[in-house]
Image 1 (cartoon, one colour):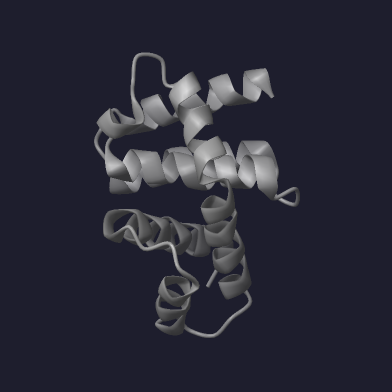
Image 2 (image 1 turned 90 degrees about the vertical axis):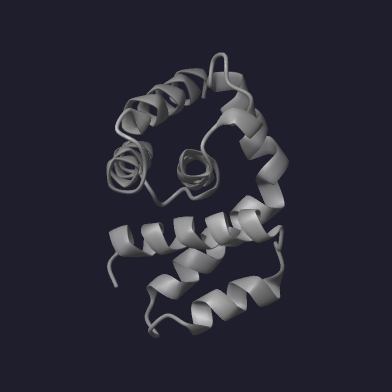
Length: 131
């Protein structure tokens, strides 16, 4: 599995965790247990744990930069894509910020509504300007 696919898997895991309100290690282990063994499983786990440990801060950054939007009004898929990108930007130093932004925009084009990629790009651009 390549990093792009691993990022999508991490997004799906975080989405599931949020929908089920289950942020446990058991949830992570069950999800990872259904994936093929490879080196990207560590990345998926790291990103999920990063989100769990920094959920409040990540969500605050989204709300501060999604002008006119409250967290509960943002589509769950868009919110999850933003959470993945912000987790990478702030907590995973080995990933260039621009890669995180570009991959988030691409995920939005694949998994979300037509205008979502513009919304996500705008929120992440605002976050990077303030960083």
